[in-house]
Image (cartoon, rainbow, N blue to C red; front, side, top):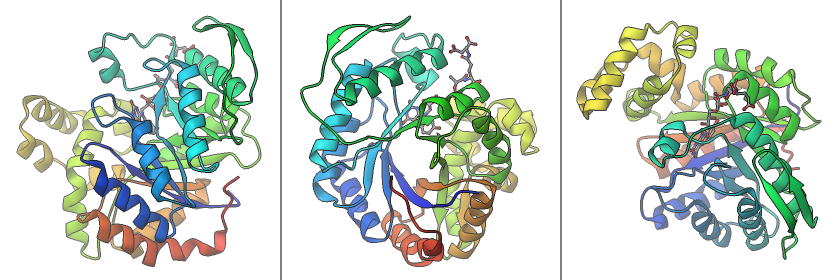
Length: 334
Ligand code: F42
């Protein structure tokens, strides 16, 4: 069981940024410790977004959750995150993963050897961030005498991971892992995989969870159903089976989404699906779920989309009724 506990929050920069930045400030004022901004080329750029967040916040850690080494060369990632660290007075953290297979395919980038490539990328990033003049001859990256012109703090690197090999690797190369899941069963599977590697002391196991809180449980559920539909459609069969969801139910959602028939897709989301793929409901119910995760070994809960039916109100509710319940567990921002 972890000795510390953090609350993170995730935002997708898919709308004008004013609202997102205001919600980051609100989250900071309501006790959140970290903000993760998702990285997809079709949304607003993740580092431009983080620069605005850095300017307006004072305490929270901030970082991309997650970038990848297929679209961005690790030297550029090192430079970008060092810049965010500079602007934020040492509050940067870096989330990096394999990348989204569908997005990469749409850009014509094959996802070859994702684990090995990520391992190299993280080594390059760490050595550049440490101020080294780097010459590196890897299988994927060849670097001759590269050096950053700016110094930065010791930036924690988190690995986005779901697969067994990536989970194990995360604990070998990372300071933490961001696991896209919400249910204890998924962490009962994932945490032993992480432990097969070599997690250092203070290694942070983060549940990157789909979250929806409201005092009205039905409203919370309704808000999370579209997100759950996409999660079900994108989940491998092994994960569906783990939660007792039969493939045909998932197929209906998948084919409806593919046709753009959102009414059928969202209407086909069942209660067991919502329970498996989100933390939703009243603050009390969410507290219960978070405690279960903490008991299994989760040390950070990242409150992810949709957050709630009214994002700002839900942030306040989480701060006032959920985060306060975990004050006794302390905090270690490293
Ligand atoms: N993706 C994005 O594009 N943008 C985001 O903002 C984002 C956020 C995010 C947050 C948390 C999180 O957990 C994931 C997130 N992702 C985001 C998705 C992320 O980029 C990955 O797509 C996702 O984490 C899936 O990764 P995975 O751990 O399932 O790894 C994949 C690649 C996988 O198949 N892993 C297998 C495994 O067992 O872990 C490895 C299979 C494999 O390729 N093995 C190789 C082989 O050749 O067979 C051998 C190993 C090698 O590479 O050398």
